[in-house]
Length: 183
Image (cartoon, rainbow, N blue to C red; front, side, top):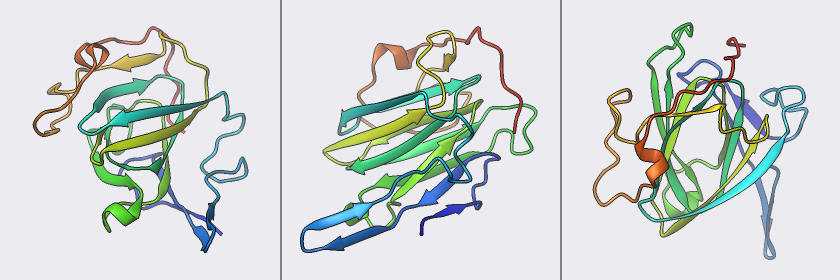
């Protein structure tokens, strides 16, 4: 049985530790069920896959309405979450952890993480390449996804040297959609 963890320092962020059932053929790993406590009712709207190379940084993104569920089946990323919700009891709390294939580094967690609306999120690829699979509770709406530049002073975080960053992750955009209240 997979478990949902409440040890997160950011209100509403939950990690589901994943269990692999392996044998000589490989392994089976269940990622998410609609009955998982961290999967909101009607939570599924879109499933996406991002393949990234070493040193790619994608940050800072946030949503007013949408929840994200992230899973890294191949490779390793540094995941950084920052609570930017003024009404949250964990406002301005930062969370940093590695997720992906634990055979690459014993500190890497094989988890699925839920990112609630208002929590800034970003990642950096630590392995040669990484694959990020993510489910979203809403279909993509460019007026719902906010952005701060990856090096914004809003979040004090050093991504390191020689990072690869797209133009979209160098700009600020404030979403025009209405913000959901903290659940």
